[in-house]
Amino acid sequence: MDAYTPEPPKKESNAFIIGTVFLGILVVFFALGKGIFDVATMPPAIDLAADDALQAGFLPVYAAGGSADPNSVSVELAPSGFPTPLPHEVDEVIEGKVPDRIVIPSIALDATVIPIGSIDLSYEEEIFQQWLAPDYRAVGWHQTSAGLGAPGNTVLNGHHNIHGEVFRDLYRLQKGDTIQVYSHGELFEYVVVYTAVLPERNQPMEVRTANAEWIQPTEDERLTVITCWPYESNTHRVLIVAVPFTSN
Image 1 (cartoon, rainbow, N blue to C red):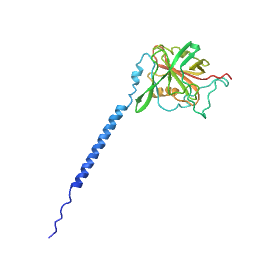
Image 2: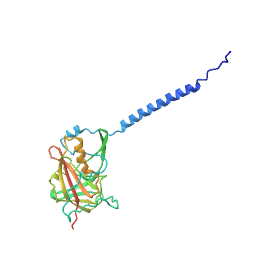
Image 3: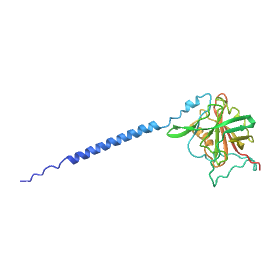
Image 4: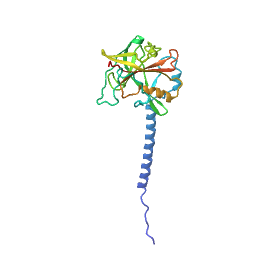
């Protein structure tokens, strides 16, 4: 007669099943929570059609993070002994001075400069910066751009047909015009070496991103000033690039 062999207890097996189910529930809740968090924290999407529908004011400037491609933002500098850019490599990082006033004699402009920030926006899973502009007669300094006297790109923007129209006549600047920027009374003088009017409205994001290369950080010391054009419709971007003036 065979000996009776009792069945092993099922407690361990049941505990394993319960633990596996509990772990699966935790994973599902974690995934759902992360998805909700990602959606809640995702920057608003860029609506290019809405931007293009604007009929007045300063069109947003989108710029992805990083530095400008030197090939896409190169400018033909004036003859030797006029403006002198800094070398591409510097031994010391200089933060520079915060600008607070701009004077452009050729268009009779004298205006306050204030620091401005940006907001993040998403477009096709990429994050871009949309820079703001002062909502009164003032020029905005991109507060993450270079300060005066520092290697890098000092970026200024402003409205041209609303809120005081501070840059209404910016499109009139020509090569050789001077731009004077102050910081607590200290003068930093620049000379214009490049001007452009770039199409913006109804352009694909690739074109807008290429336009925004001009406001990215650079290795040489320069001043970049931007607004929109023409006065009635804002279809284009006015771009002015200037470099430090030297009296060699």
